[in-house]
Length: 431
Image (cartoon, helix red, strand yellow):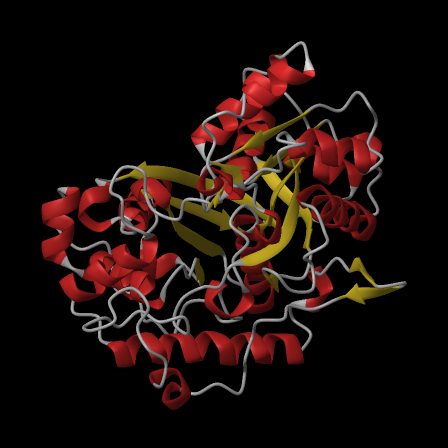
């Protein structure tokens, strides 16, 4: 292992279309989508699978039969059988962590080239049965005779056969993310009109980005069965460029029906999709003549008390990564902020720009800096493009780097919130 820390470059990346859960990708698996993103990444960069030394992928709800999707993607994607892979689960920042874990290995000389990313198929979330029925099934599996197998189910009632819905609330707080977003909106005075305005902006920008072919060059087509036919999905299905603030204002609040402001329209949807990012040491990339889309300058993961304001983690993460890199928000030319909810994004922006919040929560002598909500997410964000939990980080990275190239921006910033009160921030620079 090299004793010198090496600079890490992003040399390629792709993602599948992001489609609403239960929709066009309902028959696809997380492994299949991961393979599509992985193959497209290497094919467009004209890099052979043999050059990849490891795969690291993130997922939040792994399939029961393939919990280590990274290794399954390597095998199904025709990578050499000697290429290892491991899978990360860190809520909505799973692929962020996969990418920075890959960068750490490369920086330390443990590998030269790693494919990282994430996948999520919320159309195929594992469903469990209640404890009593599960205990009966386990006992039946150990029984030696048919009569003993039948005895195992004594006491099981019809209600025990009902499947248990996947948890959508925090284990620690018992609240959903939407309820936490409502809490933040009230605490920081985030108005409903401003949330709807931000959501409409996201949809309009996503529509324009697709229309102007800014996103499509990164899309890996996915073949899906349609009866006896096969169709090819090539675009996201959630952006609604024709939406308006007035249309969004007609939607009813979901998490606080009487006094709430968070609606389905100003929240990110449940989504299926996958993303992949190819990273290499800068020296290897230059020696091979590979394109260097950006260099990872710094990154930070933080966590806050989830009982207070669950989705404010990005404030401390952004503050920390700016300190780490010696940069200020004014140095950043492109900002991509994950849009779990419009209320969450606007609350994060408020926290970064509030001297009071930064003093009380971060112990800083001044605010981190002001951000204009119209400055971020110029090509749309998770509200419009969709949010496959394990895959969003890969989308954020490639969308940031493509915008940095378009604008000739020297530095770009990514921030994202996650369950458990966690936050993530990454800074990239142009080579």
